[in-house]
Each structure stands twice: as C-alpha cells, then as structure tokens.
Image (cartoon, rainbow, N blue to C red; front, side, top):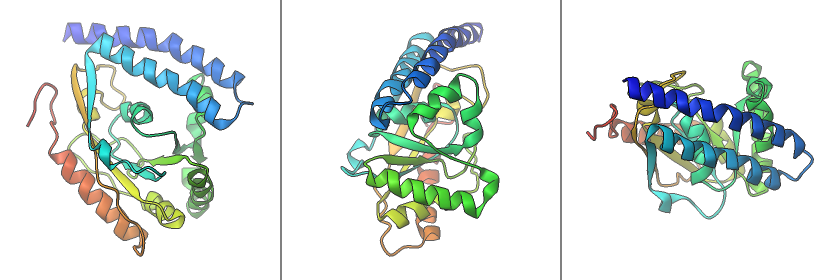
Length: 243
C-alpha cells in the first residue's frame, strides 16, 4: 500500500504542472478554430494517461473498436471515475462533452477544458438545459463532432447503478444518429475523489451502435442502460482480478 500511495502522489506531482501549463495554452489558443484547439489540448490527455501508466502502472485495453461508426454519433458512457473523461478522447474521434458549467470555473483545469468545445449546461435549468443540449448537440454533430454524455450525471461506484437520464437519447433521436454505449471498470482502479491509483488494466468495452430511428428517447435509454449495466457486471470489480 505504501508503494501505491507513493506512486499515486508522484502522479499528481507531475500532473499539476502539466495541467497548469495546458491551462495557459488553452487561454492563448481560444481565438483559433475549434478543431485546432481540440488537437492541441487533447495532448494533455495523451500525456496524462502516459504518465499514469509510468507512475502507477495503470494501463487500459479496449474491446469493440469495430463498433465505432464512420460518422459521428452520441456516446453514452458509464461514469465511475475521472479516468474515462480523459481517455475517451483517445478512443473516439474528436468529441465534445456535455458537462455542468461550474467545471469551466475551476482554476487552471476549467480554463483548458473551455478549449475542448464542451456543451456547458446549468443542471438546475431543467427543460431549458435540455433545449441547450439539443440545439448545440445537433449543431456539433452536423459539424462532424461526436457528443459524449454520462447519462447517470455523476460518478457511481463500481457495481452500483445511477438513474439514467434521457438527454443523450433525445439528442441522438433529434439528430438522427446512433447511440454508442460504453462500459468500463475504471472506478475499480481510480475511485471517485480518491488519491490512490491502483496498478492494473482498465477494461473498456464499446457496444454495437443503437439505431434510434422510430424509437422514443425512453426506449433508446433503456436499451443503452441494459447493455451498459450487463457488460459492466461482467468486468472485474477488484484490482488485480479477472472474474
């Protein structure tokens, strides 16, 4: 445990200056076109994940890459950790994330995040927030961007399930594009608000695209939820195991 703790603190020791550097870069490049900003700022994600592997021995694997369509869609992903918010940028083509606008106010981190073309919403706004996601989401999809949502809204411990919202399904239905479900077990190795990062291999599974034509947002959400939860239940729930 001592070694794990030491390696975890070493990870943050390197992550902090890296984040500060890219936050200032993000501010400087705000006048540039969105694709250019995205290409630059996602280098932070590449370096962060590489540093995580080097310091903590935490790697990752992906199954189901063949299910990623050639055209943009809506990604509905299980939310357990900060890890997936970073690594999905390395798995899918350029994307924008639907997130709470408070994150953009976080010093340094939020400044860089603003350059990643997110759709920031006020979660308390209810129907108005949904309209923002639908309007901006359809625009992003038509411009060639994927849209990433975490339907549970907050990080849920491994083995548990949150309430799935229908926002992502409604967007996919409105845009006439598929939903791509994603399951993983990142929370086993990188827990919510946890300093410790356990060594091992995070498993990511990408499911077959869900056709949204002729389906309600509720039906699409249920189909995505069923696949995600079933697949997550098949992944290891303890670091260092495969069961």
